[in-house]
Amino acid sequence: MIEYQVDEQMLEEVQAKLGEMSRKAPTVISRALNKVAVTARVDLANKAQATYTVKSGGFKKDMTIRKASAGRLEAVIHSQGKPLSITKFHTTAPKKTGAKANIIKGSGLKQLIYGNIKAFKGPNGQIYQRRSTARLPIKKLSSNSIPKMIGNEEKVYGVVKPSIDRNLQHYVEQQIELLTK
Image 1: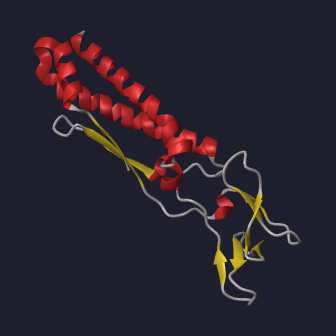
Image 2: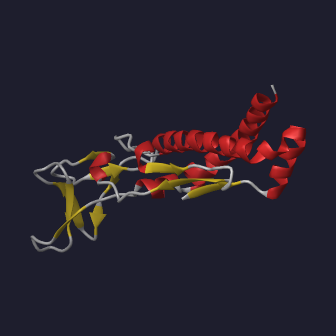
Image 3: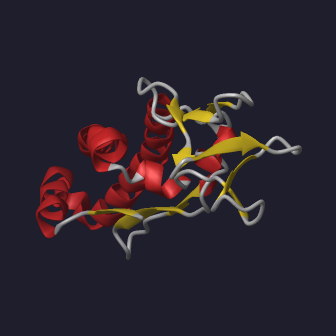
């Protein structure tokens, strides 16, 4: 969950810029926060897809926005979802060498080995791995969930955060400009 709040200092700055229309400051800030939340959701989804080799683009659909209002000056981007099947990423599963997967772009295919047991492709296209030398039990392999990918500080969220802060300043200025015309 990613939250954007406006502090008292920013509210006072906007009120000073608006002058006699200072009572409209919360409306200006809430509109700017809502625009920032929408652009941040798109930026986070694009950066996550650029970082990971995931095939399906369900990033935006798994992120919901709780919009700001004049009474509640915070916008929240909430992401939820379960771990994705490893077949949503770049994988190969030749019989002789076992299955390999590439989750993060640029890291190359890594062999999926648990102990000395290789992973294999099942009849339905999923990749499975035995938990022991016995025939059963087998486990379907999964990777990170979308919230985990988006919340990655060093690869996704940490890279997008400075642009989100710049966008907030820009959209506040834009809303003030629209109101003072």
